[in-house]
Every structure is written in C-alpha cells, then in structure tokens.
Amino acid sequence: MSPTDILNLFQGVATMVTGDPMIAIGRIILIAVGITLVFLGAKGTLEPLIMIPMGVGMASVNAAVLYLTATTTGTIFIDPMVSDPAKLLDALQINFLQPIYTFTFSNGLIACLLFMGIGVITDVGYIMMAPFSSMLIAIFAELGTILTFPIAVWMGLTYKEAAAISVVGGADGPMVLFTSLILAKDLFVPITIVAYLYLSLTYGGYPYLIRLLVPKRLRGIKMDLKNIPKISRSEKITFSIITCTILCLLFPVAAPLFMSFFVGVIIKESNVKRFVEFIEGPVLYGSTFFLGLLLGVLCEAYTILNPKVLTLLILGMIALLISGIGGIIGGYIMYFLTRGKFNPAIGIAGVSCVPTTAKVAQKEIQKVNRNAIILPYAMGPNISGVITTAIIAAIFVTILR
Image 1 (cartoon, helix red, strand yellow):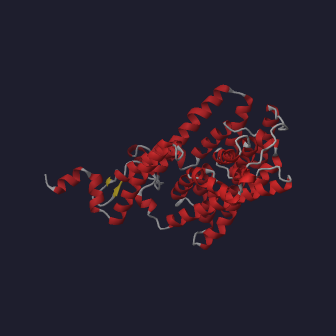
Image 2: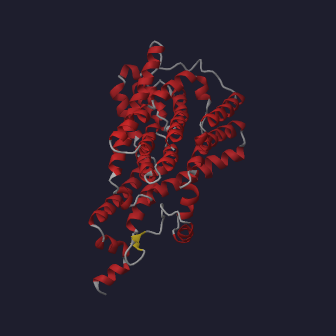
Image 3: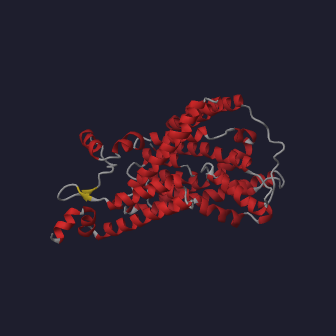
C-alpha cells in the first residue's frame, strides 16, 4: 500500500498530517490534556465525577477527526452549531451523542437536572440557623462576578459575553452553562469548559488563598456548636416553597433553576424516599457523567483555538480569585461583628461550589486546630451562594437579553 492509501485508511492521522499545522498542534495538546485530566481525576487530585468523562471525551474527539466530505473534516460525535431542522435530523441519526446534546445540553435542561440533584443533597437548615452571616458572606463572595464584568468589557468582550464569563465568579457550573447559553450562545461551549476546569481547581488554589489572607491564630478559632438551633422539616419546607415562589416572581428568567433546586430540597425534606433515591442517584450522577463527557467532546481544537478563549481563561481565573478574596472579606466582617468569635476562613465557603469550598475551609482550619468544627457554619454561606449567583445571573439575563 502507498503512503496515501495508508493515510486514507487511518483518517485520524491523515487529517492531522494534511490539515492546518496549528489545528494539528492544538489537537495533540488537547489529547495530552485529556489524558492528564483522566489521570488527575482517577488519583482524586481533580474532581473525578467531571474530569474522568471530560478527559476521555477531550482525548477521543481530538483524535477522531475524519473527512466528512472531500474538502471538509469533522467528527461524528456532536455538531453544536446545527440548527436547521433538516440538518439537525441528519445529525441526530449520524452523531452518536447528538440526541443527548440536543435534548439536554443545548437547551439548558442538564443544568436544571443538576440543580435538582444538588437540591436533594442540600440542607437549607444551614442557611436558616444563621441567615445573616450566610447571606452576608455569600453577597461578598459575588465580588468576582461583579468586578469581572467591567474588566471583561475593557478586554474587548461584548456586554453579553462579559456577563456570561463573569458568572464563573459564582463557582456554580450549571448556572454558567445556563447563562452563557442565553447570552453568548456562540461562546457557551468554551465558557462552560473554562468554568468546569477552574471549578475543579478550587480544591488546589483556595487553600493557599486562605493561608495567605487568614493568619494561623485566626484560622484556629473554634465555633460555638452547642447553641446551634434545630430547624424542623416543616420549617425547611416552608422556607423553600416561599423562597422559590418569591424568586420566581422576581426573576422569572431563572425560574427553571430556582424550581429545580427547591423541588429537590422539598422532596428531601418530605422524605419521599423513591424520589430521593432517583434524583440523587440516576438523575444527579447521570447528568454529571454526561455533562463531563459532552464538555470533553465539545473541546475540539477548532473551538479551543478561538482567539477569545485565552481571554476567557484569564477572566475565569480573575473571577474566581476575586470571589475568593471577597468571601474572606465577608468572613472578616463577621469576625469583627462578633468580636472575634467568628472564624474568617469560613468566608471562602461563600463561593458556591457546593460543598467543595465548605470542605476546603474545614480542612484548612483543622490543620491549625484539630478540634475546630466549622462545617455547619460554612454550609450556610455555601448554599446561600447558589441563590445569590442565580439572582445575579438572572439580573444579567433580564437586563441584557
């Protein structure tokens, strides 16, 4: 067989050899990144639930480029931009992940399913036991979302694009997906990828931020666990349905997310076991798996080599950094208001990567004082952050759409 025949047989190699050298280099880099994410996820360095399927998808899609016609190349995984009904029907029959993408991802449904699952594993009693400190810290932890917007506009993004990437500061992946899908559909793939890559790194980066901004003597402050009020199930259900209704009334554009989150909470508190098992099992983990897989498959070199992606990477990092600093500022405010009885390191939990940032705070505090248990106080701002992020995202969408 001639070299040409061999290349025609192994089209993944052929498209790399005969195509644009920059795209070929990008594909090789992304294959390497995908393999790395799989190993880091398997080791537990990064979040395995997202990173393993995302890494496999990223490596596979960049390897599996083939000739679709004599002059065009692509894959048979997903076509994220197809919208013409006739073409979409063809894509649904050819691209094997297209039905999942079209019916759950491109319309934001997967974000709602994830929120429902988060609701089922969330205890809103943590907010109710300390509502003032929880909301105060959560509001300060949105500093990255607020300040990144003007920075993004200054860096050349449109208002809609700037708003979409700014929501990364809330550290809420489904919210980023939902917002970018509405405001910046042409960039929602790279924005969502940036968001989930960085959210997985909060375990690695935020501990250093806590150590930098909170001295050891303050990190060792013990919280009062004896006088924590007990919140009944009926109180939690009442809080959830009233809060859900008010938020839907004020911000209808985000109503699907509010409803999904609070229906999960109410099902949990109502102890409807069959629903709880279904939502926290197949729904939550199934959605998480396919979200990771789809994000990986959407990481094609053509998408990632968009010149705006570097800007998005920088802005995502800025947003999460400022939000972390803002949360700790909120923790310090509570420290001074309580005359030194509140551990300021709890502030990092206001960045609503539930429950990652709350666990980060607990872990860093216990390194200094093994007897310091702050998780109940950290979960309040953590859950409040979900609500504040949804509110800010809803404001962005309402004003800019």
